[in-house]
Length: 624
Image (cartoon, rainbow, N blue to C red; front, top):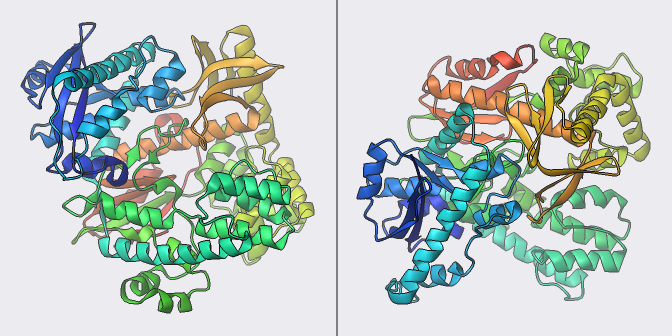
């Protein structure tokens, strides 16, 4: 028996500012009404927060289904009763490369039911307090409209549930583990959050004043992103799609005008979301000092986790400073004194964002990161036996790469500049990157590489790892042949199939990557997906290098997911997952760090032979 359910709630907490964790746990939060349907039955509307009939269905073994089920689970728990485990239709959508939002998912699938857009007025009117701080009474026609709005959400999520394949038992377990981590939460240094936010705002204000001078008062803020992009394109002949830091860092080496250079540098440096992260952290803290509900299961199409409220997956690298000293200055000095210590004060503040997260009294963090896991997975998948063997032996592949680039077999780890270039080649060239993109990537890491050397590095990588290059083309060929024939085609350990509206790429773990509504246009593979920058659902093309990136990231994710389950089994509670890094919060104990590392290095049966490695450290305050 499936029960499809949706809650409509009200609270004095702003969920957009503070996140679902604080919202759901706040005493002012309550259920206004809810709608549910059993299997294919009619939708039933209930006013108020009486969940007795739902608890009865729970006791009878019903399986509950909701969209963004983490919210329903948290609200249910706030009523004082243990919530059931949910199937999440948002997780189903995201695992198939579709938008996570209910309305966007319904629109992209062209469902017969669509999310009712008229609910915005009702939510603003009754789910938030009025100016006097009190709630308006929901009754009459507005009550009926709210019930209809809620009921339509149930109809939409039920149709998504019927339309998309379910998560297998293992992935459903990973989804539930994500909710367990979200409920556990992590402690925040609230003093650091509030003081760093003030420092950042002071610095951003000065940068905005400089922007006004450079543009003759055409702008008042670096956050005017669309206008700033248009201005740079029109005034200086650029062709920027966004003014995101990644694109600006890529184009900066090719900008000659000093004013344009300074504007771009200001945007890169002060367009950081540092102050926003500190503000978010302050607003999201629950009464016990922890933030919750920050991880999104399958937030990326490859299966990796993403974040909301506090964006944990794009924490800035910052600058090379002693973070503990910087944090102490933020807490104890004023902005003027702080600025005297750091030539790049905003970079210094950004370097302290990780320090927001602190271990509970009597506990410590065990921070363990997989070493170059994507490069290692790539060599294993592509059948680069020599590279796999060198990784297993503990050889330095960055030095080996540098030797080829510079045609110098005498290079060692002591040749740091050459080794760094070799590292960038190993980590950056595995997915078909060209030399211009390689130049920009190096620059973002503080390496000034000219076009000749960049081209030399890319060619050296492709010569040294010919099987990787073949893997790109073989992946693309297998996908295209599957589209043309409708039959399954294998490329090494992955397998492409065409099933209904999706092209699937089955990974060694048996999990599948999904490409929605695939087409062949002039022999090239295209499909529909949500743009990571604009969030528009649109047609995009893919190719061998991009497919390779998808597969490698997905396999790395599956190895880490397997390790996360193992850590929890050994009673090592996870509080963070950031890219290829896991953070465990536990009591300090001799040998515990080594235990975490060993458990993370233990491979599932399907990944035997993959040359993974991991390293880590203990700390009371999270850091890189």
